[in-house]
Amino acid sequence: ERPETSVAMRRAALQSEVAKALANDGMLLIPVFAVERTQELITDILALQDAGEIPSAPIFLDSPLAIRVTKVFQKHTGDLEDLSASAQLLNSTQLHPTETTDESKRISKITGGAIILAASGMCDAGRIRHHLKQWLWQAKATVLFVGFQAQGSMGRRISEGAKRVTIQGEDIKVNAKIRKLDAYSGHADGAELASWIAERKPIHKALFLTHGEEDQMVALRDKVIAMGVEASRIVVPDLDDEIVLSAAGNLTLVSALEPRVK
Image (tube, rainbow, N blue to C red; front, side, top):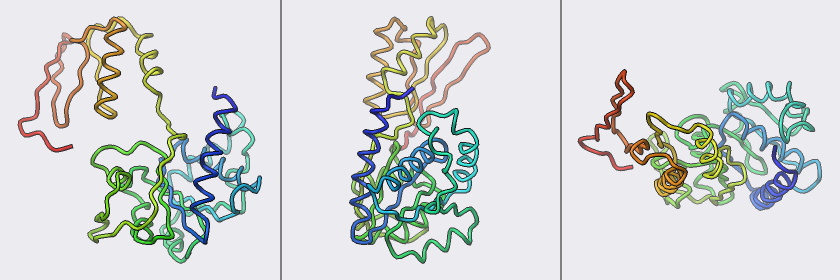
């Protein structure tokens, strides 16, 4: 269970970002993942609004899946970490779930002073792309990334400082302020992953490391080897590599003939 101090720290970091983004009638876009991170963000934004620490701006939750998941969370707030005091998740007058396409389109009439949470979290699909198309070129907008952005994703390109991106076939200049907040990571860190792996020793067949930055995967690989897992049991495949598994539990890694650029 997370200590209360970590919740307070993440809310303090969020407060700073939201307050700056909404200053002077600014617009805040947050690309989100539908499960857990969205609900934590809603909870924290509403708590900060209730405390008067950020403006009482309307919050548009523009993801049908996130809306449905939020309803499930609402039914079980008493059983969830950090959300037990937030039975008002979908009841706040500041929160506007926009489930239908028409409801989503009406958000485009907003000229500023609002918060939009929309999927997908890496900006490669979903309704967030429509909002980015409308706001990314405007200096009064802020895009706040709260999750991991994989190599090759639009979110990664924007977060790393791309000056222009193509959205729905149109060339869009990036004039919005681009911000990142790591406090809402939904993934275990290296130490937690290593601990989880240690509980599953001995590893008789193979351990695949496929998700994460290359240097971090190498660091995790070295940590797992130091725990006593044989190096030959750890597989770090590259993009487009193939793994052939046999009934006997053996594996063969077939490298891609023409590796793509990550």
